[in-house]
Length: 330
Length: 253
Image 1 (tube, rainbow over the protein chains, first blue to last red):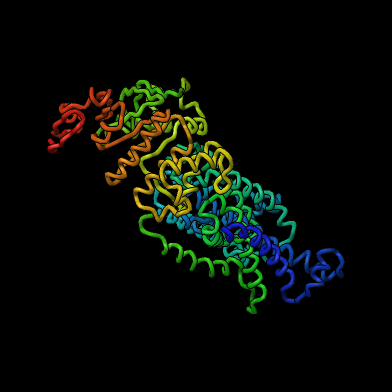
Image 2 (cartoon, each protein chain N blue to C red):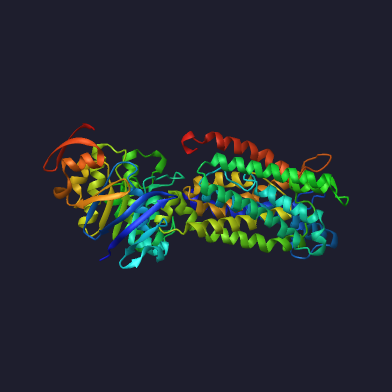
């Protein structure tokens, strides 16, 4: 009981500490005093620039992307009643990345900056809707994950096709950024563009949280105790689509945080999907901030991609969670 | 007093009839057992009565209101439903699962207050699981799980209960314990419709029996009126001797 009560305060503290750490560390180490001075507008111009234009936006971007993916993962797991569901595994992130690439590639973004998050969100919504429709027909989660793999492969193939048919010199590096995920060089303006969608998506998911608890009993009993199943499905699809799409429009496709964070949180919240949403969001946010600090301080010749680091930690965790499951769960 | 009234319900899956022209009513203070072989249409009839599936014709009313016009919340407050398959997706505590019975009253897991907490504890006490309420459901035996699901259904404190095979796969002692719980619920003013496969158990506990076969209701009435050797032959195709409410099954026909 005690660990349950301190879970949220600990996670909130960890969130603030990790973002603060992200401001301290970097190619030019700034002391605690200089960072605090910059926060309160007392520092010299170059320090302020480093904190407000480079490190803080980057850390906040990593945090909100993690939070959106963590919430989406926890909510999709509740809806599909399976701990292996996550926007990455189900192909939602890949389809969102495809949407974003499309918008960049055909120059829609030049017409209107909002086109970037909107295209990513459309990609995410299409994928989430396909998964949710398939989930009505099949009870097998293996099938859903296979569909997710199919969606991911398809999105990857279309992205390769776009590379081949590039009408304008679209750089390979940009494409790789979308496929692998990165929060390098993000500004607060980028965040403001995608932020509203992300916040609305996460809020929708929080509205559905009691229904996620009800689904613990299976769909038939859940509607028996008074859940409006159709509304629940639509809202989770919409919420996860908005949140994941917006996250991808900020950072590209970053996988596995949506699985790992809820998995760690669940035992502390009595395995209730509703109570796992907020802690999953915070923990996934902290994860990505820490992973991004790792990306920045690791002495590699060219900077690692955040999505690669997340997958290096997350993919083995995914395999481990899958192996823990008993056959009876299918 | 809430009454569930099913009138001439017909239900198809594509072209196959699942239920044809079925009518019955369920009132407070009444325990009805729904009997019939596998595939007779019992579960489909229950779902149609609850408004969970679209019917081809006929209607089901709850206190005079068509069930399909009721919101899921309103319906759930009046009828508690225990489906046949009872998967539990997560290893929650017993207390949390029972608390889901209060969903229609707006209860949130982990933050039960006032009457919700009282209803949950009362239901757990009635089903004799209060002492182990913090245990996780993946550590329970079949008999314990059955009592958890009953407690979940009772916690709603709905005037009516529909339970689809609540004693399936239980040993005789646990079958009696679960039926005792349902009987007590009915004696306290509830009304219950229960699908059973054990005819002797049904004859012992139920006030009314509904006999179903091949998507139709063939007979309904008290056990004394409707439990006959010829009925067992017609409905189940078994040969049996009946002496009062005692049944001796001799074999399949």
